[in-house]
Length: 341
Image (spheres, rainbow, N blue to C red):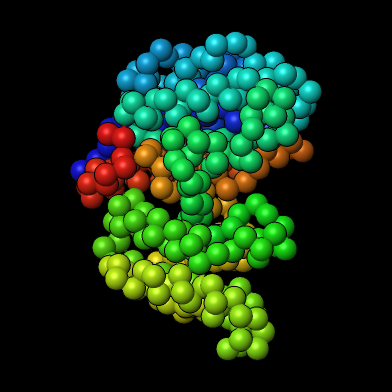
């Protein structure tokens, strides 16, 4: 079973590389990609295309359903309510409301079942706070808009590895302080459901890292493995999944170890993202799991320093668009109850 709805791609920060990697994604990969359209300012994209030398015709559309018939010959773009004035690398313009509008309209489209999923271009959160953006980041904002009581879980996926950090954008000291059995168990449960319904893994294999060196050495290097992590694993003993751990973080990511699990659940941000980005920096995709709609994102930032030069690599965005469509199709096949279809 496939999903013939388009993927909707948000503008992201217009001073960053989001626009040009979207143009390059269509120019270089449209034959192999599922149809997608942008929520953006078509006039801005035409200016960017000319200035950066990226040959990509633009087709303005009014409805998501218009995407497929336009996609072969031009990049479909749905116009935002106001023009966008930002220049590459210049974050001084007041375009924050349009960045938020693009996110909101993408969510509404996905929730209404008009799009297979959302792929969000990178944002610069500091630019959005003056425009009324109060969430710590994209993921938290999506969860709030979806009406969730707790934030979605962040899963990073590439052809070589999938990882999930239990704590995300916190200092290491703060991450250790908020690590609880309840949050680890919640993360494991959502991750297992995602593997089953989003990736079609019938019996997921989960490797759970420890927090301390050597997974605590039986309590000699810290008791978090004994007092916090192991009880979380035990709580899920009745689910249809193989959960191993706590494991020493320094031996989890070599090639032979990676063949023994489908995802590694780690205790803090860098413990998960360092091996992920080392193994496959260009193909990484950020997936928000636990949402009632599909959301993916390239695993990089706005890259102001190269914006407008056509030097950015669109591979992560291409992978994110493709994965959004694949997850949507998998949800239909597996009958995932939280899919907007």
